[in-house]
Length: 199
Image (cartoon, rainbow, N blue to C red; front, side):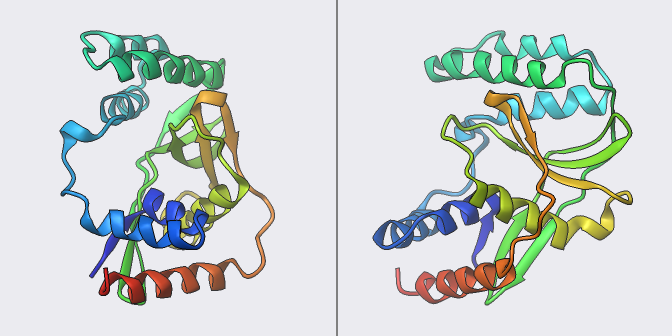
């Protein structure tokens, strides 16, 4: 059974025509996950640890220590700066974010937000967005809808499903449900399922 990350699935949905099929083919044929090739792994894990252990946000700067990858040396400071700017003076406390699979048409999507944070009294389940590419409304809607559908019952009451565009210091929590979104997701999973065996 194919298993895609939530980011993979959103990338497929956001493409059209031949690039959509190409993206599915890339996902199927890429090597197995390796921590060594996970560009944001160190930074992502440090963000989680700082909140889980209730540490000072300035400790994030230690993520830069010992970096040898030139691309990380360029990208990481901007991400850390954006994260600290977003954090500001907010009062935040940690809760363990749930994760699970959304399955349909023989395809699994791993729904695994990185952060569970009560922010100024309101619980948020947060998916981190690290990329420099603009975060489109379509991506936000799919991510937050699947988080709510799969994980909503495992969260504290009134939890807001959110995406944090780190580089732009912007937390986005949609409040209006998008019509036909369940049908769109179902159609995309049917497409992936049908294509998977032929590529």
